[in-house]
Length: 385
Image (cartoon, rainbow, N blue to C red; front, side, top):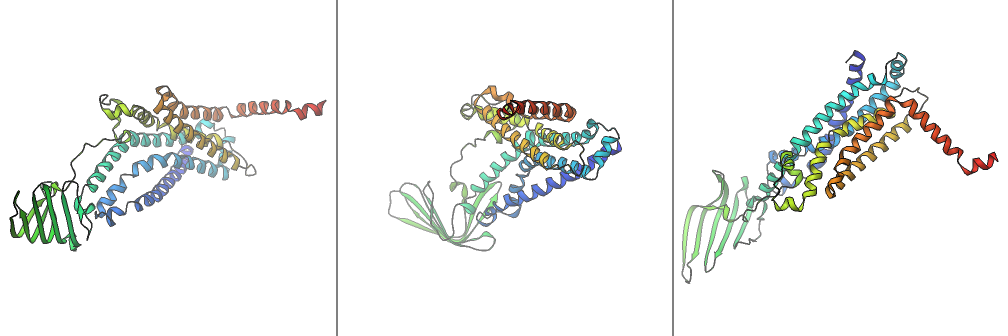
């Protein structure tokens, strides 16, 4: 890059980073506030809260980065034109290709980041998020039982504690184990603590007794204890295989799916659309940068308004995103629509390039078409007659 191109690149890069950090931070905070129940209601630590909310950052960056780039290109071009620098560059013989080069360089960098996040990082973050949420919900002591309530599980266990003390200690415990017909156990304890040993969760009871009824007998036995340990695996529901959705699967798994899997047979279209949506995601930063430059790349005097050009660029971006979503949705229903997933951003890049490099010819052609349409108007023909 020559010095003037580096200057343009710095302006665009600064605006892009400001937009990306500001928008991502704002939206992340709003998303994080929705997960506060991990701490308040589910008894998780601040580290778990930050980890879970942090897993959404790759998705936010992928969504926000193309729009931040679009805003950055518009800002840079407006600044250059407002300071008459764009006019001086054009008068000095600097071609549109040279002015476009720093913006394309930035767009390629953003495209690489978006592509990497979409193809590699996002599926892993979605999968890890599913695993974390599953573990949090599977924490029986933190999420299932409630203070002062009798909680009856489907496997014949009833759990109750009076209140929760310091450091998560459970006070006034009552546990009834009626899983085996005709043989019941009742555990009473002053306090209990959940402990982990070698990856297994146990409930350590202190100062209590066990009332056990013998099978097919009315006799009962009472055992007092100072400390008694119960395996919490008995309280958890039976494990079930976790079925990951298409967006939670790696790109390799989408490229080479297990075709014998029942879920794949039911959702084959979603697997196909998710794969091609990922592979085409890197094209959108380029498309948005080209649209912005096509709208505002021409030098104009301060008396020439640029508001209409900005509005046209915004409309074009909205239309592009709607067409992209429609193409991905159509690809889920029909394999033939896969080509449209790539054609939408490529068409936007092509049309924008036509306006950038052949702007006068395009505008002259549009003027001739408009003139021909006005000439065909009924009122004009009557006036001539």
